[in-house]
Image 1 (cartoon, chains in turn blue, orange):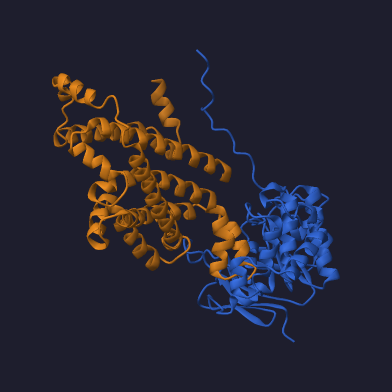
Image 2: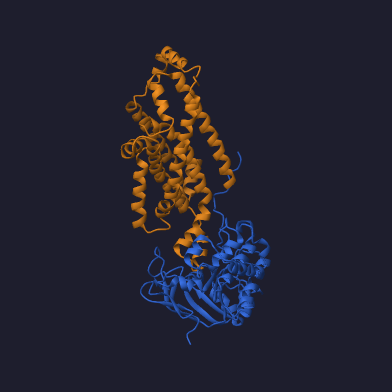
Length: 282
Length: 268
C-alpha cells in the first residue's frame, strides 16, 4: 500500500537565490498512516518550506519531484495538481502565526474549516447549517474554547488563537495534520497544551501528524519519529530517542547542548565597534 | 578634525547616510524651482485682490442679507442633490469592489491587473463635470445624468483606494483559509474582505461626502440638483439668493460630514 505522505525527488530554489543555493535538495521521504513525526533542524534548514510544499501552498522546482498525500497527487514537476483544493481539504494546516481572520468571530473562523466540502455557493454566502455549526462548537469544546465562540479572534491570546486554529482543522475533518512551528510563538504553558492536543489527535483519532519544531525536547517527548533537515537535506531520519547530543550538535552546528537538549544560541551579540564610544560631554 | 576622523571610522554602508543632506537639499531646490516656474503660468497676481478692494467690498455687500424667500425650493433641490450623491456613490461602491480586487497585484495576475487599472485611471482622469455634460446629451437633462457622472468617476477613485487597501493586507489569514481547501472566491470573502472592510467603509463614506459637494455643481450643466438654482441666481446677479443657497449647501454638507464621521467611528 502507498504511504500516506510520499515525497520523491523534491527540490526547491527560491527565485532570487543562486542556482546552487537550494532551499530543498532532492528530498525523498515517506510517512505512514498514523505516525507522529517531528521535523527538526536549524532556522533556514528548509523544514517549514517542506511543510508548505506538502499542503500545496508552494511549488517545487520544475525539473523533478512529486508529492503525493493520501494517494492523491499534490504537485508534480513544479505544478500544483488541478485537484489541489480537494487534497487541501483533507490536510489540516496549523501555522506559527495561527492565521485566523482577526475581525471574524471565533466560530466563523472555525466554520471556514468546512469550506472544502460544503457546496460552493453556500460557503460563499456563509450559510452554514445547524449540523456544521454543531460540529464547529464540538471541536471548539474539545480544545476548551467553546466559551469564546462569539468573540472576535483578535481578542484572544496567542495560545487561545492556536487552539482555535486546531479546532478549524478538526472541523475540516482533516486526515493529515501539518503543523508549522505551532508553538514557536507561544508561552511554555500554551505550548505544552497545544502539543498535548496534537498528540491526542494523533493517538485518539489516528490522524497522521507532521510537526516542525525548534525545541528538540518537545520532539523527543511527543514524536516517536524525527526527521532532521540541514541546509535543505535530510540528515537524520529515525527514532527521536536516538537523537544524541553529539548527533544534535552535528545537525545544529554547535557543540553546547544543555541537559534538555535545547540547542544553544548560535548568534553572539555583536561586538561594539572600536573607536566609536560616546563622545565625552565636553 | 573631529568630524573627519569620525568619517573614516564609519563602515562603508553608513557613509551614504551623510550624503543624505545633499539629496534633501536638492529636493527642496527642485520644489522651489517648480513653484517659481508655475507662478508665471498661473498668472499669480495677489495684488489684484487689493487693487480693486472697493469693488470687492461692494460685491460682497450684495450677498447680505441672504434672501431665503424661496427656501422651500432650495431645500427640495438640496434633497435631490443628496439623492444624486447617494445613488452615484452606492453604484460606484458596488462596482468598485470587483474592479478594486481585479486591480490588486497580490490577488490577480498582471494581465488582469494592468488593463483594469488603466480602465480605472481613465474613469478617474475625467472630472465629474465633463461626464455630466456627456450624460446630459446621452440621457437628457435631469438628475439621472448627474448620478451617472458621479458613478463613473467615483468608481475609478474607489477602485484605486480599495485595491490599495487590499494590497496592504496580511497574507497569513488568506493562506489560513486557502489551506482548508476553499476556492479563490472564498479566500477573498473570508480572508481578504474582513481585513479591508473598515478601510473600505471609511473610503466609501469619504467619497459620499465629496459626492454631495460635487453634486451641487453638476446641476450647472443641467444634470439636476441645487446647482441649477445656484447657476441661475449667479447669472441673474441675484447675489442675496446665491448667498442663501450657499448657506444651505454649507449646512447640509457639514451635517453630513458629522454624521459620516460618527458612522465611521462605529465601524473602526
